[in-house]
Image 1 (cartoon, rainbow, N blue to C red):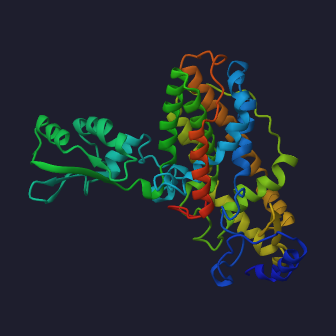
Image 2: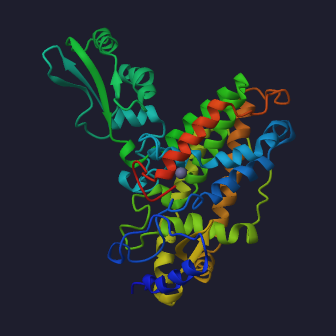
Image 3: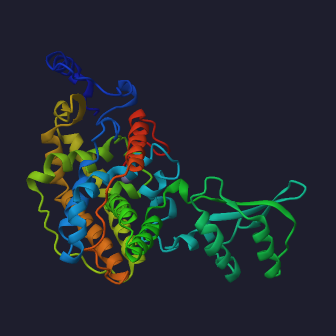
Length: 421
Ligand SMILES: [Zn+2]
């Protein structure tokens, strides 16, 4: 049975009359388009951001003293900027795929045939094309290949050097001359080319576990260079992406329950429940961070673990919704003078209880993993002395950049997948 969400509108109107300055932001679609549950994630500036900020802050507090000396000075910055990665999704098309991976697009767990590194994945899911002098488009690598495909070693080297670094280039361009030389050197047919490019299908389903590996390399490099500004930005973003990797619905194409009649469950699980209960009830003490030996396996492990919980997240909510009184499932709530409809406190408490602590476990695991990723990068960089590093001082340029991001975010046009953070 569909909960009668819109029976709350008289209450809403009453609230609006009673509360001067209150306003409904970005009203949702009419009832027929949204059968139940919450407004779109992002319908309020702070909605969905609570957990990310908490995770980054608590990760800082678990660091060893040698790191704390720098990170503690910047704890507010790292917490506040935990959500920049989501805000960038309103500014750049390449940002969205970094936040998720639709593992169900690649078969069944444990997805052994899915390459664990980006270069290997591109070798399987990218094609290289050239444009001849006559203007014809020629397929040079890829196309229909039998599985399993074992690319020849020269192509692997070419991808590592030229294709993977160009992954975020919107045009996916390659240098025609370099490609031609490569083809000639390896005894392959090498037509004269006026242009070259590649096309890949990974982005369509998200690149989260591969992007975490790049982030880890970049953070390690920033520690080595003692580049405090870059380091803090990367650490804040890494906290965000690792947070996302711990959310089951960031690992499935049914990311907002839209395929199973559960639209809105994304924000229910990752935003509403933590906001209502985390500070009141969760044990935030996660112990010391660990040095991770095999970061690729580590990042994949967290994503696969999240994915193993997808069915529970969906099935438990569906079962609860059928037995919970429909008129007590959705309630009006208010934040910063904005009224919105969200799962009622009792309904959220019942869902949390039925999940048997899953949200708390994943949030705790995320805190520990964020601290461990930062700690691992610091150790791998040779444990540089952070005591003399400059604290981050916001420059005029930084302020302008932050304002621009805020403006684009405020306009509310997300690029790519809409319903999740
Ligand atoms: Zn995100």
